[in-house]
Amino acid sequence: MITYLPVDLQLKDDYPFTCPCGHQQYARPSIAMRFDLNMGHGTCKKCNMFLHLEIVLPDNDAMKAEPHDAWSARLEASYR
Image 1 (cartoon, one colour):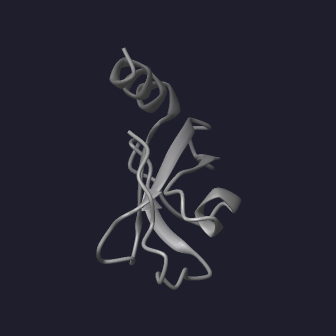
Image 2 (cartoon, rainbow, N blue to C red; image 1 turned 90 degrees about the horizontal axis):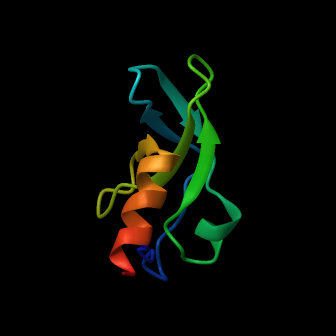
Image 3 (spheres, rainbow, N blue to C red; image 1 turned 180 degrees about the vertical axis):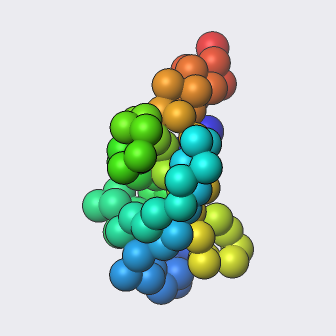
């Protein structure tokens, strides 16, 4: 599911997140996030898993990470 960020949300320079493998790291907001779409992607530096990232709302203090394939399958299923 695609979610939107509040228009008045002040993005931070970077956000902590934890990969499903357990590795903790940081990510900067994506270009899409700067245009109010709550979506981004990155790769875990430990296991190299390709991840979908979203800012945790309403706290705006971290990102949640999930495997990109799982997010993509969930998104595709929501449009069927």
